[in-house]
Structures are given as C-alpha cells and as structure tokens.
Length: 403
Figure: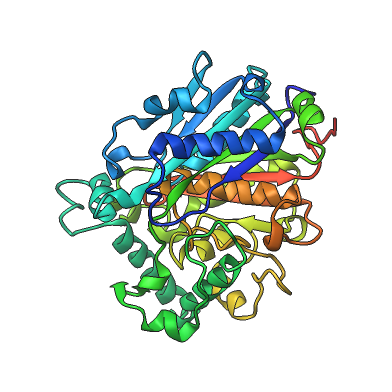
C-alpha cells in the first residue's frame, strides 16, 4: 500500500505581486524549494526527483528557464522533469509528481516553479500566439476576448446579468483580504466592479485576473515518507485531466457535440477524479474548493460541470451566499483564487497548495472548519487543458481500502 498512497508533506508560496525585483527567477524558485523542504522538515537529500512547473518563457525572455534553475532547486544529479500545459501547468505538475510516486519510482518528489509574467509589457500579445494565424489571430482573439465570448454566451443562455458576475469578484476579493500571499487584497463592491473599465464586453477590469509574480513549491511522498515527515499530511486521493482540440473554432461548429462554453472536459475529468477518491456526492463530501478562475465567469461554469449545482444556477447561488466561506454551503476559493492572484505557470500549483493546506490545517485566516476533502483545479489554453485533484485527510485507494 505504500506505493499506491501519495501524500502532500510540505508546501510553500511567496507573497505574490506585480514584480519581485529583489530576486532573479532562479532565486525565486530556490526560495520556494527551500521553503517547502523546511515546511516538511526535509533536506535536499530526502528528495528523489524534481518536477518543474514552467509555462511560456516568452514572458520574461529567458528560454527554458528550468535549465537555469537546476542547481538552485537541488535537482543536480536527480531526475528532473519540466511540465507545460499553459495555465494548467501547476496542476499538471502536481499530477506528474503524484504519478511518479504512485508508480513506486520515487519515494518523494519536489514540485517547484516561479513566474515573472509582468516582465513583458503586453502578456496578451504573447498569449495571442496560441491562436490560428489565418482564422483566429487577426480577429483578434485573446484570452480576454475569448473569456468575454464565454461570458456573453452564458449570460444569454441563462438570463443572468453583469451584476451577477460582479458578485463573484466581491466574494473573491473579500476572501483574498485574509490571504497574506494574495496579489489583490482590496475589497470591492458590486458598484465598483461595474464602474471599472470595460476590457471586453461584458468583462470589466475587476473581473480579469492580475499579472502576478512569485514562486511556490510542494513536496509529495509515499506513505512511508508521510509517516516519517508529516503528522497531518494531505493525501492525494484522486487526480484526473482531460484535453480538447487546440483550435478554438473547432469547438463551436454546427457539428460539434455541445456549445463551446459547455466545458465538457470538466465533467469528464471530475467523474474520473471522484471515482478514484470514492466521492459519490461532491456537494456533501467536499468541504472547500480552490478553482482556477482567472475571470468572473470561469468558476461558475466549473462549479456546474463539477456537479456542485445544476447548469445555469451557479450565479443564482452566488447571490444567495451559497459559495461564501462563512455561512455558505461550499466555500469556493477561500484564498481569493486566480481572480486575485495569477502567476500563470504556478497558478494551478498554488490552487493545489491552498487546497492541501486546508486539509493540513495550515490555511491560517483562510481555514475552513471541519475539512475532510478538498478539490483544486487548473485550466490551460482556452479551456484546452483541464485537471482536477482531490485531497483528503485520510488515504483512499481505488478499491476503497485504507492503508
């Protein structure tokens, strides 16, 4: 059973802000690696392999920066792997490390990454390169305009308003005000969100994530390592990921099985993830979620596809306080989520760290009471890559046996 059980042994994240001018990229990564090892009470010799979360390097102008960081993150002489699935990179890195440990190849793996996205003057120009040169790039599509199309379609189909989206931001900022690591901590009102500049209808400035810089790391290990180093580990009980076509336009043709904004990869991934973790009723068995939500619309669609509510109802439940930390049915993004902090390469890793910390009772002022299971997610491309991970306070294997 030791090979099939994987647990989080330590976590670390820096404070996130627009720039970290006092440190180079590798120094940022090293801060996180050292911090996660210290949190677990481990030394570099206790780590068997390293997974590096690194998304596009265009943002800082250094190609393959993971190679630059090898000596600084204790990877020299050990297996080292880079993971890159766009915005989903951090979550994919967690799952890569999980698979390495679960397969019995390594006792423990360090997951680490850093981001300096604000070093490019125009991140959207870089992200625009993912679109088709002839049919999509000149429209011009970008992550902002694509998310806006998503929001337009959702509001039209279900009859919601821009104010309903603004309430998502109000909750996110309220939660982030208790997060010492969050980039945007200032609380806002619905009126202030509505008055912020329009970016791409119907999304306004406060409904779009910031460009965040910082670093994060997580240590995962098998059951033997958990018994040795962590008295209250967060067990990784379910992992799943799905991928869809790269070409955005192919998801909205007349012959497509569903509307492009239906985000079907979420539903298929979550079913697999729940089955692994023995989750039959997510709303009853999961006590907090940390969703990758760079826009006000993103969490609502995920909550519905994840089975926490029926299609078209997430924003209605938002009005009723259903997703609030205090008094809500399911606390959504107690950290403030990606709307308040978006270091692209490690945003999914931070979501996993925040979800794991809830299990380990290390979330500080963000701590949710009586947590047994949490879920984190990350999204890459324009919904091309999706992954979700379930953390629990007890180990659970596919056969339902507890080691």
